[in-house]
Image (cartoon, rainbow, N blue to C red; front, side, top):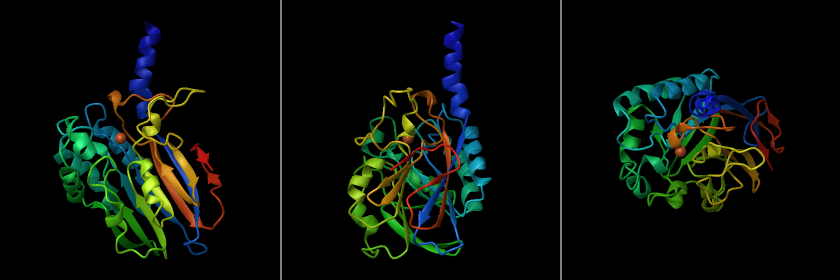
Length: 287
Ligand SMILES: [Fe+2]
């Protein structure tokens, strides 16, 4: 009985609040010698009764303390449409663009047919409005050119893969067929790489998997909402490019976590062409 209580307390209360700051250095051929670009990548806040605003704020503060040049958010800001005070949520999110330029894509829980069938929004319009009200630029099948910390780059954002809104051609329309500068893509679901492979980009940022939330030693995560289960958490070398999949901040199933801590991610882009080599903390490197 005591053991069950302790285990329950751990998976519901301890590990979900035990953030890991994952730091990866990623060489990019587009960066000039002696420069760098620090990206804060946050995903899957899942604001809900299981994931209070205070936990999201803790993650945000941990990330902002690393002084990012650029902030990228990759979806699932809520779990359903009825369990979140969106007015207060706006205030939670405004600190992000106040600290650094912030861009966002949406996820399957933010709206669309899949979401609607699970007490979610019919479309992602309300969540995109929330983000825009907070000063965050939403990239919904769209691209933008930015100059950040002296680096010119394109950011491309996709609608969620499980909705009818996903349109990769619209997202890349208007960009040179072959990238002529750094190009970072925000796409919630890592399975989208199967479609995105036909476009030119260097770094793809994803969430969605939560790393499985429960990761059984020697077995792995039993539940992953993806087709390509080989790509579920950490940094991957893939077709000469990089894919980063964060375990995210919040989660579903009451927010439980086991052997799969919530994550705040810093991606330090540095000049170079060599394969990914450096990590300052745990994140898995897959090549
Ligand atoms: Fe999620």
